[in-house]
Image (cartoon, rainbow, N blue to C red; front, side):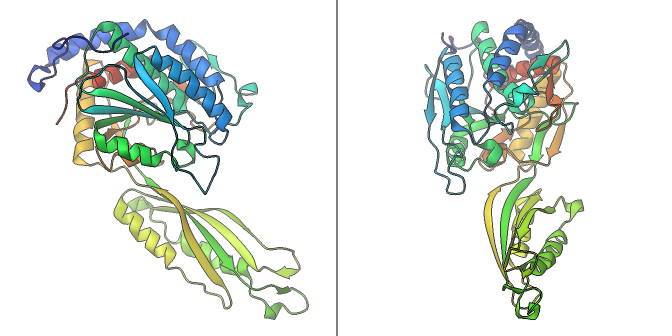
Length: 413
């Protein structure tokens, strides 16, 4: 099967990208995607039943194998590639990541379809949170975040293929296995692909039940603080010790003081531990800190403030290190132009699309540093990382048509 056909079947010049043409294309695509309803649901069920927690490479490998077979049937050349090693987590990305290029393509600019197969759900979740569907929605671990988006990729490409439409930009797919744990091993690959891509479409879930596209995302960083004190007997000579827990208590207060919700800055101490015995002055304690910001300047400011914190108790030492980070996705001119283009295509499909800001990060934050990126093109639903995870079927089909419209639209450069 060949995704490409003879030139001219789809207008690639901006001048011919008219409202009349869009309306005709939209109507054709909607009918085609509606015919895929049951196959889409069936394939989503197959993919969800391949449970794929981030830190179980044997499980994520099965997902990759399944999708390699699917993409090979769509005239792609899929392969599993290894990412960078992660000293922080040796299991991260150990299964590798899926890269797929069209089997037949001319030398032309590329457009990147981006997603992840890993989920936050451990193996065995299906026993108490099964894959279920009714007339309106589909429930199950990973259906919304983001296996439903992967199915959209597959069937948008299938629709284009069956309709015999040409794509002005060559589609390249990248699906990683470590997104939910920070994309530590896959980020260098994503950066390389983004630098070569004219535009990136991220099939993460939509924002809210009104299906907002994500044009801004908070960036995040994780820090670990080690507080060192001095041990002593809590009854015999407490004054000879220096409590690392007391030192930690001051550190936590100073960290929370960095919050500035009006500017979109959040600093949270989400994990603490320390001490040895109740009758012992604690010689050591630790804290893990989560930081979220809307722009890189705020990120640099908060990081500097954290690294500059000093102990307020005698005999205590702070050792603070940055564990990892993900940049914010900002409303760059290229991103906004791509968003307005998607909004126009959505209108042809009868969708009134809005843009929004997400509090969490994605790999779109990385690609946005290098090229036009549109995130949140995946399913409309609710319950990401929650037991009520689900997607809504009709919007899911509509957004598959939207993705096909984007893939077959002209270059914006």
